[in-house]
Length: 398
Ligand code: ADP
Image (cartoon, rainbow, N blue to C red; front, top):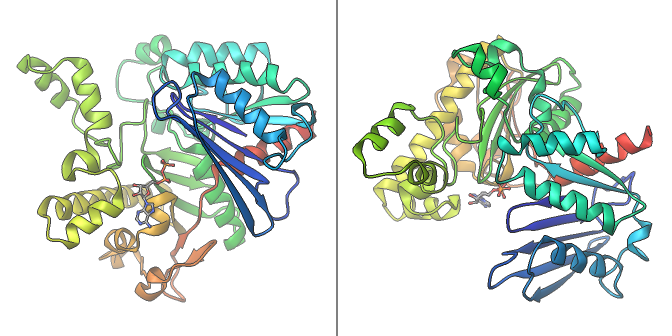
């Protein structure tokens, strides 16, 4: 599978179906087109990992993809005899608009839709499309499949995805909630349903990575989510503010001191943990708090309180809750955040077991007090595996 960012390319190679759910190799190219670009390639054999690092200039995504092909089939670094041996490539595509509620084989029509949706995701969809077209040439025997970040949320009802603005803006400008991180919310909710043995479970999935979002899930379907038209709304994130009254934007514009680009930059890249405490890395913010930094302490309170409020809202939307899932970098690793969020929720019968919460373990783990109705779970996300599995399933049926 390939995950193309504006200056990065991530890839994982799987032999499907996979009992271990482990890739045979993974890799990452960063700073494409910039000084300091590098490739990191990892070959995984059982429990053994061999890491290859190449600090070299990667001019563009085409250059990057060529290097990946060389590594995938090279001696020592390779996992296939040649690029021709690859049967399918799954591409992460950020925006599928209202068109896609699942993975899609990349036909000319599908690519046209992705291109059309570039207006809604200008930083992401054009790069994905470029990589899809490069990949079609690079892997001529492979089926190419798009897996959309928005797809899982296409089941939201109208009253959840429409804004209270003129419907003309929805019809003509496509203004609505789309939601993102869908592949992750789907993956962890699927694992949770398997764990609970309850297909109709009411689930709240809290994805806390660099970007953060929370989703309400019923019968395995997303019914509401905190990111909206773009990825800015909802929870406090690494560098994004999350929910903010739009009046702030007009006020700042009115001062004449900020352009709309400045405000866009402030809200997307200079807010959240970074804007408030100086680092977008939760580990740094936690260390700062421990050292007595007041801002770090306050942003952690704001971060947790926002999530707590959304959990309350989604319990109301779902008319109850069977499981709350914590996932992604912060959700899986930061016991303190989970404890703050779940504190004083006894009215909602949410009881976190502090000892279980503080015991790190691989895989899905239940950190709720034994015997309580609402399960609090830590479920590792794996968007790459999910993309590979969805790609495999779709190609099986061709
Ligand atoms: P993304 O995929 O959105 O880039 P990740 O899911 O990798 O993000 O999460 C990145 C975040 O996870 C960072 O803010 C980082 O600080 C946080 N994180 C990673 N490991 C830990 C940890 N052990 N404790 C607390 N936070 C962590």
